[in-house]
Image 1: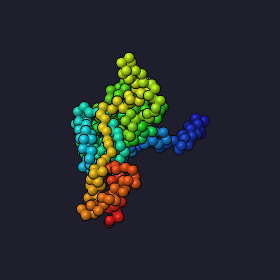
Image 2: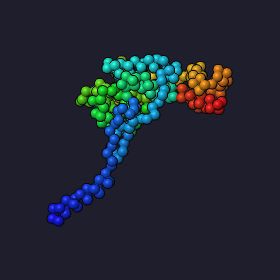
Image 3: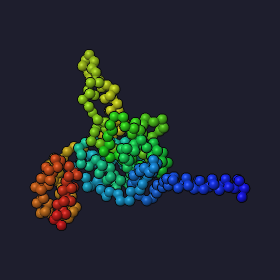
Image 4: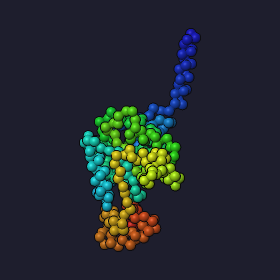
Length: 287
C-alpha cells in the first residue's frame, strides 16, 4: 500500500470519528403534517417542529369578548385573503382569552391556508431566520408569542423591533406577528422613568428617551386589542357554557353557581380560565 493510500485511509477513519460527534441533521419542516408548528432548538440550531395535537378551541368557546373576537377575526380574514393586515398585540387581564383567541383563529382559518408558529420569548432573536424559512411558502403564517415581555437589555427586544418594522428588507406578505402580554408596552415601567419627562413653558409634558424607547416597541404593532376583567355575571355565564359542554344538566348548572363564586374568590380572579378550571372540576365530581 502506497503512502498516499495509507494517508487517505487514515483521513477517512478520522472523518468517521468526527462525524460521530457532530449533531444529527435537523429535519426539514413537513408542511403537510400539521397546521401548527413550534420553533425548537437543538445543539444551537433552530428548526420547526410540527404540533401533532392542536388546540380545538373555536370562536364560539370564547364568551364575553365579542369586540375583541371581531377585531382579531377581521384582521386575520384580511390576512388570509391577501389583503393588508396588521401585526397584533393583545394585552390586559390574565385568563381573559388572549392566547385562546389566537388558537381559535387557527381553527377558523386553517382551511384557507393559515398556519401558526409558536415562538418562545427566549428565541425572539431567531425571528429573521424563521421569516427567511417561510417567506417563499404559499401559506399565510402567524408567528405567535404568548406572554411576551422584556427586561432591560434582552437580545430579543431589538430583533422583534426589526421584524415588526425596521429592517432594510421589505416585510413578507405571508407573515404576521401576534403577541400577548400583561404589559401594554412590553417593558417594565419604573418610577425613575418619570424623571425623564420634560415640560415646556405651557406645561405640556414630553417623554424622555427612556419612555420613548419603551413605547416604540408596542407602537410597531398596528393593532392593539385590550382585555378586561369579567363581571360576576359574565363569569357565571362562562361557567355555565363550559358546564353545558361537559353535559351537565340545567339543575346542576344552577346548583354550581355558589361553588363557582367560592372557587373564583379563592383564586382572586373571575377570569375565563378560572371558569373553565372550575367547570372541569365540578363536572368531574358530578360524573
